[in-house]
Length: 425
Ligand code: AMP
Ligand code: GLY
Image 1 (cartoon, rainbow, N blue to C red):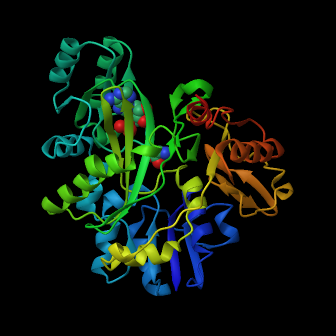
Image 2 (cartoon, rainbow, N blue to C red):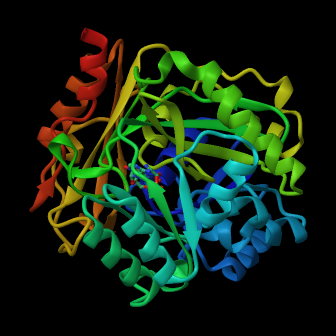
Image 3 (cartoon, rainbow, N blue to C red):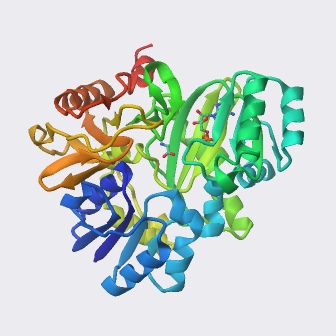
């Protein structure tokens, strides 16, 4: 079978890496891909939101399965377009991808179905939003309705910051049409975790638990990023799979089906573990990045078999197996990310790190210029390792991080520390 993976991040490199191990796969393409996917998948110079271009390519190349990595094309309806053209494609349709595409929709959906989440109000009028903020006081959270590359959420420590966020989103239109509405939400104190599941719209099968590290600096300081590292399992929710399935994942998939929005693909719940129970912060309609890297490292089952079962509505007959132990991914980023950063720094040291079953460097913002690998994005590499336990996985990953160099390399030194602390108390 010929496979097309759409996207260019660390997640897509991990997908390509996993799929390349399937005996059923003859050839992989990645559009547009990065310096790492290039070794396993033929690069296709089409951007991930160029749906016409991707459709044309898949038709001409007779692609047997297209796997969509990022949320952008999903919310634009790439799955509907491929399905209408009779091409097999993995991901939710547009009317289901709204779970990530609109925070207003999602908050109302959660309320309708009694799924636990922070209290909120949504507004299309900034004056009313500001009145509500002044009434509620701080800390308080302001969220742009639509997609904003992870930057549309402001956790405001005081009322003035929340008020100026409303103006920034709704009047200065910092995130364009994503800011036509805002959600103003109760601040939740607690520890975050990521929970993903595969679903064909009826059966929901959980993946192993994980935890991301969103802020750019150690100790969860600094601005939020796409994610600076992740590990699995996450002790903070590891023993609560049944509860998360019963209170969040299954009701969500069932609720979407009831509302005429059947959900197929990977469903990702961002959770806050609070003293008053688990609450949904957000949904993503795809694998997390970087969570996909350590999670796919632990997946034993052939991913193509899982995806095919989902497309054919027979996920209930599939057994999904995971490796024991732990895996971790440490992201190496460009200095300045998530703000402005320089590109084109030469990456060295990767040849010292032979890929093995328990250590692999996934690329994100890299590309080849001749025989030189250079940086081309904010998140550059995701050094991923597994071990008998979290501590041994971390040792392996950080050892490799130390051997890789590029000018201005930045990484967090405390990935997985929350997990270690919970294991040790
Ligand atoms: P979201 O995209 O909605 O997950 O928000 C991005 C990040 O903002 C989350 O990962 C949390 O770190 C933080 N956040 C979102 N909502 C809240 C909330 N109600 N209380 C505290 N932090 C939040
Ligand atoms: N790591 C969080 C995300 O993929 O959105």
